[in-house]
Structures are given as structure tokens and as C-alpha cells.
Image (tube, rainbow, N blue to C red; front, side, top):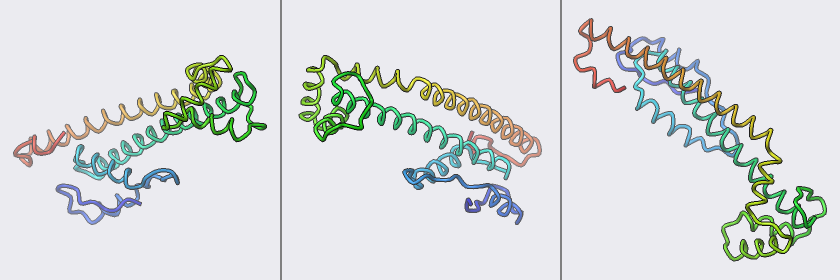
Length: 197
């Protein structure tokens, strides 16, 4: 549950209760809940929702952005995991392979070294790879080929999330502009620029 937030101009006791009905975002074990809260705070500062419904739309925007971050992270982890398997399998089989069942410690170490930050270990693994007649770039290409359908799914999911976010943002902007125009017409807003977006 999200904690109640005082919205500008809202004195209704029902506002906090209504906002408490907005479901929170599930944070997976490898995600940072503080990053989510920082994102939520930044969105609330940027959008300055003036009604409970505008707040709900901002919460939906936060949720969509979080889903996009998660999808990108999962896509990247899929690539890293498959690259590691292809590297280890290639060292084991001495040809492009992602079969790792019989990999020895040296094959596993070199497979990890190809992705690691130790330049000496990476150079050693690349030298061993060149003995097989392959480059790290060829392993990357093979990894992408093997993940083709999975990458298509990630990319379609991201494109769908981006479209949903863009439509929601347009809806929020129209709703907020309409509210501000109505307040200005009623003389309730002296300086519209103070409202934010």
C-alpha cells in the first residue's frame, strides 16, 4: 500500500482513504525498493497531481516505468546468462555450443572471464578462444541468434509498455490542463505556472 499523501487543495477525509486503495508495486528480491520510492517521489514532484484520480494516473505511470526497467533488466540478464553458457560450452566443445554439462573448472573460469572486469583474465580467455578460431564478437552474435525469439518477446513487451505509458501521459496532461483551465476560469489559480507541468 502507498502511504497517504496530501494533495493540493484536497481537504476531504476520503482522499487519503481513496489513495490507500491504489495497490503498491511488487518489488522482486533483486530490485531496490528505495529506487522505486525515489522514482515515485520524482514523478510526484514532476507531475504535481491535484486530484486523487491524477494521483492514480501518476501511480500508473510509476508502475509502467518500473515494469520497463524490470523488462530491460530481465532482457539483459537473459543475454548475459546465455552468453556465459555459450562461452563455457564453446570452451568445452571447442566449437560454438551452449552445452555446459561436461564443462571443467578451466572452461567455466574462462567463460566467466570473457564477461569479467579483469582485463588480464579476459585477455587469457580471448587467447584461448582464438585457439578455437573464434572471437568474443562471434560468441555475442551466436548468443543473440540463440535468443532470437526471446529477444523479440522482450522487445514487443517493451514497445507495448512504452505505448501504454505514452497514452497514459497524454491522458494525464489533458486532464490536468482541463482542471487548471477550470480553476483559472473560476479565479482559483493566480499563476498557472506555479502548478508545474
